[in-house]
Length: 107
Image 1 (tube, rainbow, N blue to C red):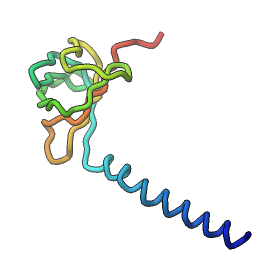
Image 2 (image 1 turned 90 degrees about the vertical axis):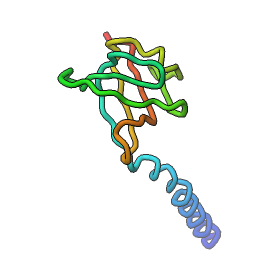
Image 3 (image 1 turned 135 degrees about the horizontal axis):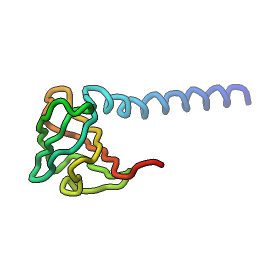
Image 4 (image 1 turned 60 degrees about the vertical axis):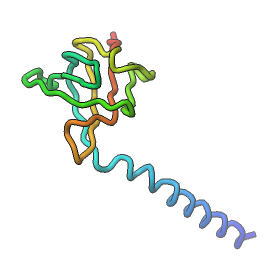
């Protein structure tokens, strides 16, 4: 019984290690920043920095994951003034991989 428990433990640890590897790799090599939408559509996002001091444009490919309050939405659903968290790949500051929008305010 003792040997079976030890084998089961080793198998579980190996499974956690190998399954967890790809998940960790997805988080590496990405940059995230927050700001407000100025304009969104036609594969581009014009936004301000969080403090509103600078505007910059991102390229939003069709493969980018876009959510509004945790639900899938479209780039065109992002209205002016909406708070967003934008994730870009490390190799390019302009191309977006994910946009998380918060349209509802907590009271």
